[in-house]
Amino acid sequence: MRSEALTRPMAVAGTFYPNDPQQLNRLLDEYFGAEVEDRQDAVAIIGPHAGLVYSGPIAGSAYNSARSAIEQAERIVLIGPSHRVGFHGVALSGYRWFESPIGALEIDQEAYDILKDMPGFTVREDAHALEHGLEVHLPFIQRVAKATAKLVPLVVGQVDDDQLAAGLDAIIDETTFVIISSDLSHFHDYETARRLDAQTSQAIQEKRPDDIDGKGACGAAAIRGYLHTAASSNLGVEIVDLRNSGDTAGGKDRVVGYGAYVFR
Image (cartoon, rainbow, N blue to C red):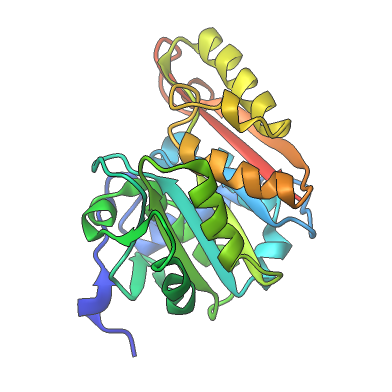
C-alpha cells in the first residue's frame, strides 16, 4: 500500500500542468492525438519539460514515437537537469513514490540500490523537491506505461559524462526504457532559436556529446551522458519533432526551443 509520507508531493501541479485530473487527461488526449510513427524497437526518447501549453505537443510526439516500447517496459529511467539546486553528481530520491494528479509511480529501489554505490550518485531530496523537469513527464509516462512499471528518477547536476553513462549502463537491460527531459535554446528570437536548435539537433543525431552544452539544451549533461551509452550500443537517433514556443503558444520575440528524439 502506498504511504503518503513516502510519496513526493507535487511541486508544479496547477502551474506547469492542470491539477484537475479530468482537465489534464483532456490535454493528454490532445497531445497523444498527433500522428507519429510508433517505433516498436525504440529504447529511449528525449522530450521537453516546459508548461504543457508550450511544450505538450512536442512531448506528445516524443511519447507517440515510442509508445509500444514504453508500454512493454518494466523499468523507466527518467533523467533531467536540476533547475533550482546547484550540486555535483546525480541525485537519487528518498521517496518511494512519485505522483501526478492521475496517479503515482513506484520508485525502482533495486535500481537505486545499484546506483547509490556508484561514483557520482547520491541521495539529495532537495534536488527533487521543487524540480519540474521530471515532474511534467509523469502524466505522459502514466498514460502509456503499464501499471507495474517502476520509475528511476535522476536529477543531474554537474557530473562527468562517463560517470552518468556508467550508472545508466549498470541499470539498463532489455526491459528498460530511458526518457531524457530537456528543452533546447532559451529566450532567443524565433529565427535564431530555429538555427541554434537545428545545430543542437544535428549534434544529438550524430551523437556528438562534446558539441552539446547548456546554451543549446538545459538538459545537456543528461543528454551527453546518454549519448555515450547510445554510441557504445550502436543506437541510431531520429528527430521526431522540432519546434519552439513561438509555434505553440506565445510570441516569437523570445522563445524556448523544444525537440523530440527517439533512439533505436
